[in-house]
Image (tube, rainbow, N blue to C red):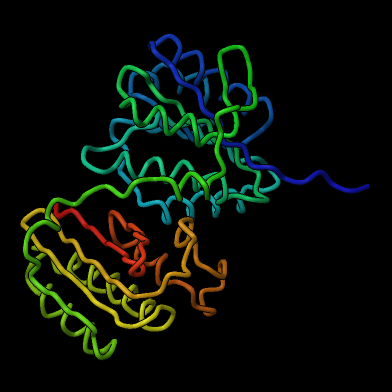
Length: 308
């Protein structure tokens, strides 16, 4: 007898009242308790206080105290937990929130990538969006990035769902206003990777206000520069901007063949890091935003880190 394939679930439920939020959360978690799932939930603190006493099986966290995690770290932690709890299903409930700034842009990417990140793993994710607080653009993105919709009456296929690659390919790249100003470093036709790394490191020195942040950003831009030299087409150029609240760097090569907007959210060769393929993944782990901008002149990778 052939075992049924393990299928991850990624569902959306939009609420517009506290009562709907309460009912949706309770129903999803009751379902998991009956199935014996390992469960985690991030919901408003008031709802944690209501639900936790009756659901000791659930690991609760208050959504308003959630720490923003970059997508590669989030994917890695969920994959690890799902592997460790197998053959039980790993059930996650979350009220989707985001800090100010570009965080909602990252959230829509995150939702699309979620549909590719857990193939073969018993993961059930229910994303709750509150119509009262989520921006209209976030709700539209959620409607395009969840294969299934839940209502208080059940679960159904989402007719508005879009293929993750097609969705990500169609996203506009948000503007970084600092790019309208003069960069602190401009390098055209870099002669070698070591020299470009050195120039970037020298230009970054002391500009982050925190040595760890500076070193992380330098490592990230160096990895992208290495990709440009190894896999791209010369010439390779770089621009660096630094303000009191932001680091922005672009690395450009003349290649036009790279097309995968889903790259870099997991190591290219899986868990075996000895095989390489980690440059873009490391950059996404180390920076707040990594944007791939394709044009007739080549590929530009833009890396952004907010200085907190």
